[in-house]
Image (cartoon, rainbow, N blue to C red; front, top):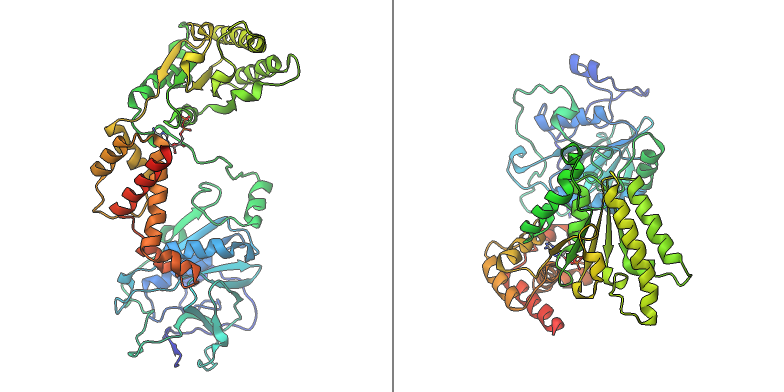
Length: 497
Ligand code: ADP
């Protein structure tokens, strides 16, 4: 096997003494900058090299520069090894290198990251195993493996070394893989203008790789990483447009524009009813986000204390919290567990006092100015005590029904979004079959998951994972086909029987 250098680059000498790089002086002078690994990528002044240089200049001890031709692979790799990186990564600068940047238009398959600690630079190979990152001193000979940084490995760079990429298994033509277009007029001002910058502070979800160091840096400082879970909005709910409109009318607009509703009695109790798994809880979460209100989910069974008077007390406490922290949305699931009809039996006496407490709290809430709303959800409206359903209590009743054909298509679109799905998949066909099989919203979500599993099996990806021949580049081959979905539907339908 022959090992060939692929970085045909110019290597700049570096001074023996450590010096901080002054970006201004680099830009203004024809002098060679004092950084260790400037000779990347070959050409004398290609724009990619320039961008790379500005990324390096921008690095501090809390950031990382990522050079990548495949962000999926580099992100996955980074996630895998992030805990080995002993600096926080509050910011990433990403330099994407595409085919257009290559002289011979060959696909580039090398990804790496660079970070800085004190005055030292570390390079980390974010490619798959077959691609090895070459780090070497130009005076040294090349045909030794010791300069190659393995996949996921981190190497401290010594002065005088430069980095390039190496293909250990070189093809017969000895092709260069890492060459860029010849220089053209290019006048960079700073890294942020030319590289994709993501900050762990402003967009926590944008930076997938948060190591412990990053998290403690964020929480120790004045800036906080958001710990919110995925925020559901009305866009995440399919087929319930008319209910959403009702909720806008009764809850969202009053919360957002209280001045408009100053003299009007608001419906603060809303009862959502309908078959399970059709989106009632989803609606509650989405309302809270759309109205930017506090959201608290409780299951009605939580009120069932054995201790006498405990249930009433917890009902009072939760209403007090809702009022104090308004705007507030209290979502009570499985409301029939406490709101059952009073039937005079001994068990019902326990329920009586809780129902009475609810009635009292609801009428106090109606009278108060606090923008606090209680949404109760049940699959069994018929079980609920009519006193609770009267106006002034849970006066607004909204049915969340099983999805119809259009609803199923909308729900499919929501759950299929971002999934690798063959263009040939017919949504109409799927929706028809789902309707025949009485699918609820949750079944649609399940169909997408199972469809994906089926695709993994059909495409031999499972086998590759089992025998450890899976490559991150295999990710691109995964596509869910119609047959994967129809098999999934059949399986879910069978389970429903
Ligand atoms: P419910 O409260 O009516 O029992 P959920 O809101 O908990 O049902 O729904 C369960 C899951 O099913 C949701 O998290 C979502 O993934 C999916 N789902 C249900 N209904 C819908 C819908 N209308 N649109 C999109 N997804 C839905």
